[in-house]
Image (cartoon, rainbow, N blue to C red; front, side):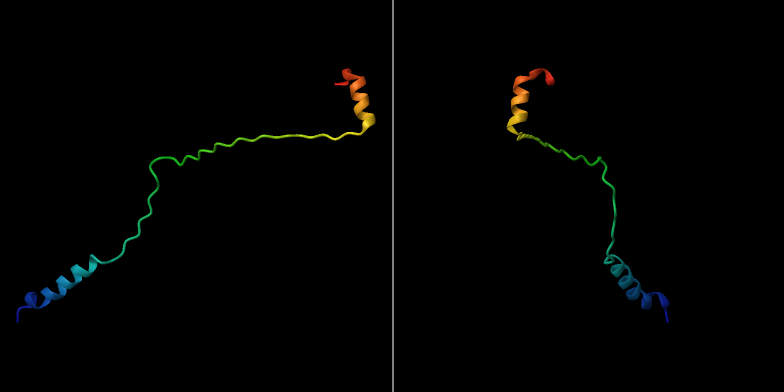
Length: 64
């Protein structure tokens, strides 16, 4: 018996099944990661003072 013709179907099946093996690949990006943050921050500060302090600040404006 000739060994090569009897092993040929087994060899072909092995080669075909090798093509079906899933492959996982992890690749790093070529360009750096950029984060564009357009942020506008506005603040409003309200100060509530006593009448005595308010009068003092009006009368003596050279304190600050």
